[in-house]
Length: 343
Image (cartoon, rainbow, N blue to C red; front, side, top):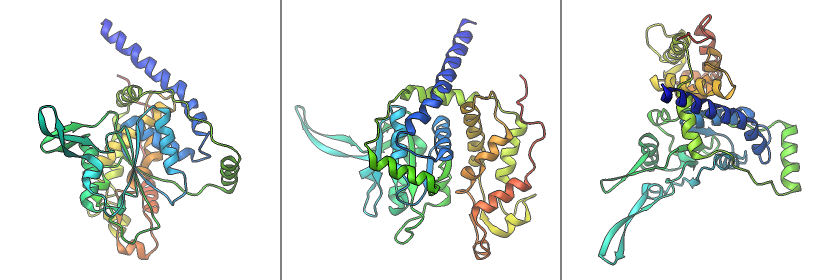
């Protein structure tokens, strides 16, 4: 009984610590980042849910600065890896070298840059599939294997991979099965004019103030546990499942526009990440349960990289974003499911 009470008090303190630091996160990021509130929220949701993110945006939109700043706030070791056509898997994971010791020569594993808490895989689609696969294996297993020996990666472990939507020549787009490993595809767009003016003024007037960390890697791991315990009604989970299932062409009950425009739809992992993301969003907003609205708010980020439109859709000017919009309109929500069932 005492263990249950102690566990409850610990969880309560963890939630209070998170909620108390939410405004501090915004304050610290505002030192270097202007606007992009929706992007920041989605990255924090993925961080607390333990998912990886694909980030799509043009160059010069402060993607690296944003991710590095979040790592500093949570006191996480940050590494940036620039993906190039000649990058080899060992350049990421590490390699074994022959080392002279007092006991003679022996092979020693030298860790690569992937041994960090937060990895920025910059322009992941500019490197060949073999190197992409090495990173994605580490994302899935949280370990690196060299000469049959497993080397666990530090926890927490997050990969945020960027894709440049402009430079398509000489790139190696990730296959759908590999894209599915990412929880969200976060789109960073250009700022409104007033925000761009603020950025220019801020960056040309003075050096930015240093980011002050006030969380730790252990805090993040505790947030992972708390997120999974956030209540969610079975009807809300069912809505997430139906939303993902409705995106698959040539299935029973699939909307006509999906059969017409989509070649490949979202799998089960999409529903899992929608539910996890909804729980994390509810926690960040100091709510006791996840709702249908949480699922809907995260639908674009969770589905846009899991739905492959066909040539007919492209010829008609149909985008993935518009397909997700139609899905949200066609899949009915759950009446009265905004409140989790009492236990």
